[in-house]
Length: 338
Length: 294
Image 1 (tube, each protein chain N blue to C red):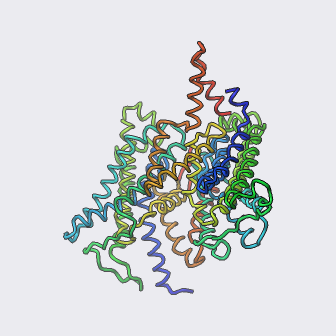
Image 2 (tube, rainbow over the protein chains, first blue to last red; image 1 turned 120 degrees about the vertical axis):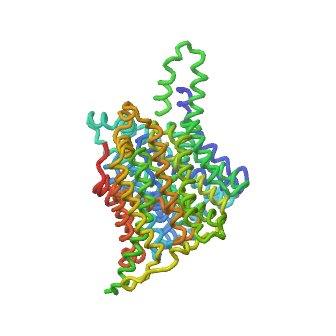
Image 3 (cartoon, rainbow over the protein chains, first blue to last red; image 1 turned 180 degrees about the horizontal axis):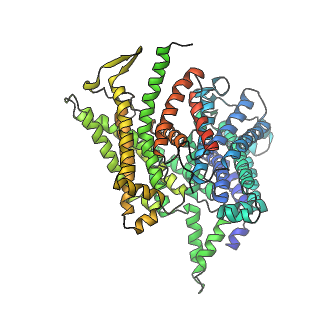
């Protein structure tokens, strides 16, 4: 894995993502924007799921809060894009701090239930508070950010607004993912994985487990809020469904699909999820059925997801020439997680 | 101050809703209590039960009292479906983390939701009340259909019946032992695998029965699965996951909070029950009548 690890993947993926507008297809750009935004959503969840070992079933709450906060600022208050975006993330983080404070006191299934309960509270507020959130109708016609300055640039000026917005999204998502990477590689991130592997032992060596879990919860909430804010603009509207509990299952599915043991797993999963969705919905309206079947196959046959399975395959190919292959499974376990 | 008959009507409405919720949530709670699996697909079983009851009633069309065998048939079919799911798939996930079990049951939600759409379409369906219970009773200025009265009597009967089986019979003893310590029970010679399958079937039966019995009161629509499951979660959380009487109490509280919440905060009654769920989880995660988990 060492040579694979030395590749600056964030830069590689970022560079690859920048090529999309040059393909000149409105559809490709649309799909790529969707993938970029939801990758960030799934990766923010994986900070909890894969790195801290917390199963949140209410992550959509922070996605929705970010989306509403940003959309309200831009639409109702006429605020510019970047401050609104950051405010969306901070608002989501603030809610994550309050909700997370209570959630991290619970373990396992109760943690999942309480995150779900808070998400339902957020959904109920968005659904019923007509004066502010538009209630059931949501907030349609969220304005596009002002990106006219791009038109004066040499190459970018020829792009359509959708392509320009895509580039803005890619830039923001790349920054966020780089931020997540730094957090995960920092001593703080290492402590999170210790908590995931054995919370009790972490406590014994003097780690404040709850404080670390809460911090991870807030960071995950912040990035989910950013992705929600971007999604609201991309979607040209924010709706209460953004916070409904079934929405919380989506990043979970993406993460499992891609593989939660690898840093890029959730992004791979988001890409696979969205491409699959596009392909299947062109044949049949029964997309949830297909997704359910795919999910069951994954859970039973490929529990490591796409990335986990690929990494495992690469590892096996590499291990073959060495006579001492006995220790390979352990090495894979610890390597893939990191 | 609103009139008494109005308040009494709200109370009765809340009570009827509570009884249905109890039927469904008790199945969820039994499954969680023994298998330690939080079954998202429980709501889907409820929905499929409702559709099946509608279908069976249609097939038996000229029969005036076709509703009763239809409801029972639908519930039994759902029990069978639950048994197949548990035997073939779910049992292979017991040793894995909760996340896999949760996502598996969620996959079932996705699949069953679409199966219902494929088989029965997306338009609203409804079943008329069985003629034997078509009338209604006038009580303290409130009109209560006989059917609702029947539900209000049936559900506590089922509750007492289950309590009796669990607490006073040999089968009940094995089930309670399975909830406490699976391994020791297996070492004592009980077939734990079938106990699990059996409990999953009983839980599914209750979901299917709830769905079938609700059809004369509520119309059958796609999306009723994901809606009811959240309500059932709230009920079991209030009462205590895995606690039988807790579920009964939770359903009563939920029904009244929802029905009187509408009077106090017309817009935010769904908000009130979610807050109640969060508050219980914060203050007493094991619920009002549950026991803390190890």
